[in-house]
Length: 480
Image (cartoon, rainbow, N blue to C red; front, side, top):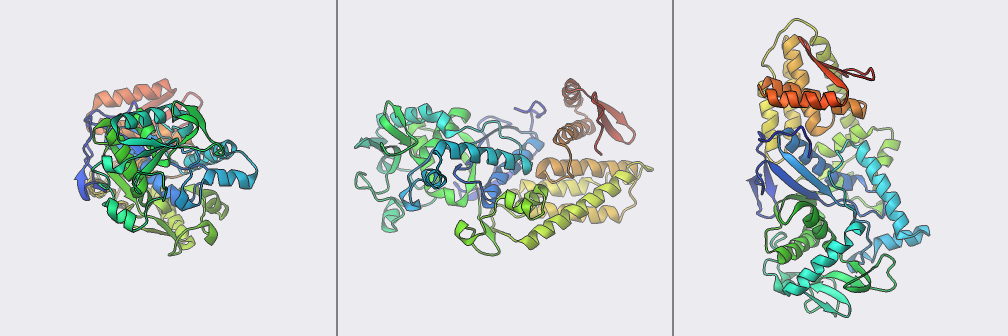
């Protein structure tokens, strides 16, 4: 956990819960601690900006909660195991490997490297755990054995299936009824199943490249849904606080996760489920066949920055479809340019006579309220721009300008859209700003603790009449 977290959260967010179908206050198993799991990439091809909309939702959640004083334990999986999914034309990992004349392992390693590079480009905080599915095969086998023992799974012809008939709550997340799934042909046809809606936990195929010899037999590999449950339960415990993913994962993936996890543990699998809507391109679907399945690399080659792309993907409400256009990228560039110019103005004003004390409070309050209300980023950005117009029309000086700068630092803490800085400077600046906020609210213990953390990194902080300034042993200094 981040050593700078407070023990008592002051932010009290409310999220729309796909499970309960209503907006609910965040409740966690352990007070002040959020354990959250996010479905990461299947590493057969470089993730598209549509995938990154989902990944950035996870980053926004973490940033918001940490800013609000929560301890966060974040897990995002990397699916580096191929799966045979009949309704998607087979195993994508194997298909990609065959097309390139490589092994699935080589493909997975290269795409994982790209994913991590893009994660850093887009200013995502690295999750505390980035488990690879191939490292959790023993945990998956153990989970299957538990389900076989409890009667929730059965084996036929060396395949293991989950029995939906043995889990009465199946459909609780998506609202699907088993009989409707069969009528609508939304299940994979397999004559070996006892029931058409049963799903594979473990498969056996001597021709499958990615396979393991386990207590379940030779030439085996996990079903798609099994992996996330095994990794989540291993790293976060039997009940998660938040689980996120794209809307396409509600069924069958997340529905099946719930079924197999709760059948194994007898406990609630996750309290809050958040799902983002799809990213469209020019008002239509995104697809490789359409030539518009852009990756971050494609956008950067067009001359845009990763910061501009991050803003473009975050500025819409996660529960509404977002339309990506090149005109929208220009709008993102314009917004950030205006923000940068304003910050430059405020930096200069911070050195002048004190004026405007307390001017940030109503704007900051409204900004918090917007984000507490189901991550309403559009409303928060409107508040920010209203604040800029207000502050420009006010006679601001020293102390008021420094309050504005501190607030802009908080905006960057949450949204990650501040001016380009070296990553080391960005992290130091974040800690210095956090210490200053602790001082302003009289939390001297927290302020001293952060100072000691900075000191251990060779950073000295000086509290001046114009706000805190820092310098490092290597000669660097406050970037603003």
